[in-house]
Length: 253
Ligand code: MN
Image 1 (cartoon, helix red, strand yellow):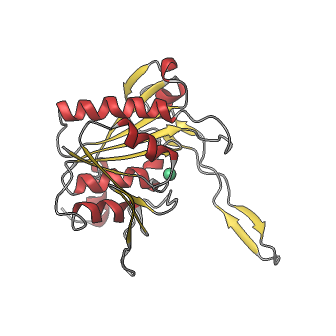
Image 2 (image 1 turned 90 degrees about the vertical axis):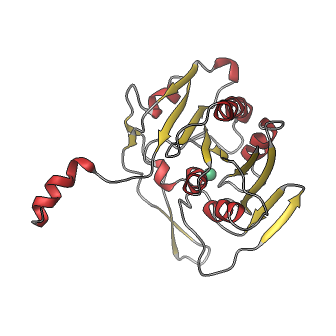
């Protein structure tokens, strides 16, 4: 089996190195990832400039592009073969609830699914930690291997993308796995205004809001309780419950 590994934190990030190590022996591993941190890139594609690919080492490539660019390129043109599975992560930060709409980590997996591959995204719940705080990527790596092995033994149906969030604790303290639905967050903090050295205003996107719909059954709740959260995602955003109401609002049958 050929496994494509990507992420949105960049090809040198700790999480992707841990993921590659975790999957050793499960198949032919190829890394194609952004050249730098592209967190928040969502499903964006680079259309106005060409994509340049560089080789960092055997089977590790980096691209001046988004996570979606990387997976798209890796599956449809970069190699004379196609991977069977796309594994994304391990992201430095959770992708819970609404985060999945902004996440490049999830987008990389989603692109794999669009192109017909088994796809899974892994994220470590390091939210709010300082740069030098302890990050248990080895916990993420342990569960990434477990879940990829399970996918190899028993693939899921085509429409399912797995979004996995791992608590940032030692593996021995994890209480198990829970299959969850997406919760959602309170609105994000306001933009943070600062000044550049020339006195001109600049703005930083503020931190994501805390969990709002974060009760039992949600991804937020599972991770907070020390479980690995496994959420099956699909891409159809249609609000089916609203179809009839909108038909009568528009005046069409
Ligand atoms: Mn990221």
